[in-house]
Image (cartoon, rainbow, N blue to C red):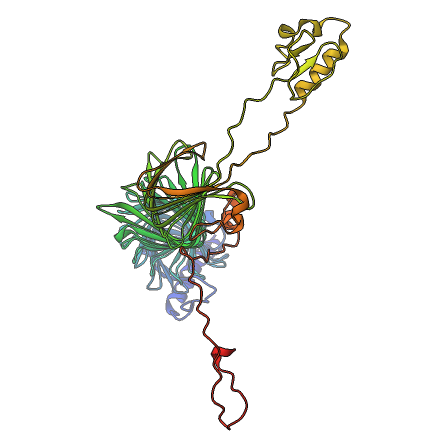
Length: 616
């Protein structure tokens, strides 16, 4: 009996002795790489065999250390055989001087250095305060992670939430995954995966991301945001959308405070107020002056009445103006295509408030069969439709009759008026000249006839009006009403002959030109029908004559400044992207060079002839 009592006392004292030894050797376990948990303090220490072999109950102001982590609790169960413990109540872990962790319970494994905190868990460092229901913290690697949602508050007031997350204390970095949100006073971020550095306050986005603010909505699949400087960069389909404008590109850079932005590769900028879209490979936007610039393979798409205008240029600038509304400027090698109008020039300006489009430096316009040129042009639009055109200085309109004959209208200035889609009237103001080729009036085509007796088809020639010849209608449907006999049985040959005649197209009647008419008048008005000259009114001092073809050289029958630029005309949408050849022409004919007589220079050595530049 006495022997059993002594053994019991020894087993009770041994854990206390081991604890005392741990206290007596503070150096043990003080390094980060220590393998054993160091017991520091407890108000009460009890050996509890019901907890397991070498298990101890610690009660009151419990304090233990492992590496550079110091742990506090109200109570704990310590398992010395496996170097672990479970603690309860007011858990606090000090990780060096950088991280503090709090919770309601703690399970700690000294072999792995993993601390599992549960309850009202908090993790605090100098920059953030994180709250969660559970947290696993790797003391050896200074890393914490959770998978049951957490809320993190940064020192600048931002609130970050996610379903899962990892914190790397050494590099002050969070990695948030699943349903990530960032709430700021200026914006809200929604992302799939985000990395956040607590020192630099820079967020990195991985996966679909949306940033919403009162000013705009930003979307991307990859990028970063510097919350200190309010600057950001996005890639993989970055897009910035405001109520009036939207820009997207492969890569975007944006400064929120100044509104300065850059776009790289496959840039698309849409302006809903103007119903336009600009495309290119490089863009610069400046919100503070309400402007943007796009260059490198620029395309402008402008929605119009029932059609769209497509324009290409080297670069395009747009700026908002309080008086003129938005102003668009396209520079160098401008080329545009619209179904009923095409054009080229060196530069172009569009004024939104006036619906006015100005073309500079060698502008050329095409409308149906007409080519229009002048030193300067401006197009007035009404309701997104071309309404009027001013051609200033050396105005010229040309339409082609055939390979050598061209109808021409020239004047100092012109004003052209448009109908639904084509020219309807042109007023020439000053130095008016015309060359056109009048034709004989076309007679009505003769009726197509069929000889009922022979079944012969005379073609377009007239036949005697007797009972054997009938005029056929233009359609097979009304044939029976006109010639009932043809439709009766037994008249297959006549029916076939009639069908043959109806299906046979009329041969075109050769155009008969009267001559070449050249007239001058100070002012002229030209009326057009379906894009062709219908009537010409010479108003002031008309003079001219009609010359037979035999008396004129048609190849040289041209007005001053004549040039036919059909090869520059964009006939399809894709033609505005073809190699652009800038027209090189003069609006007035060049003066003939004066040939100076060759004068031999005086020989320097008294003999021979010296050839001067004038004599070469």
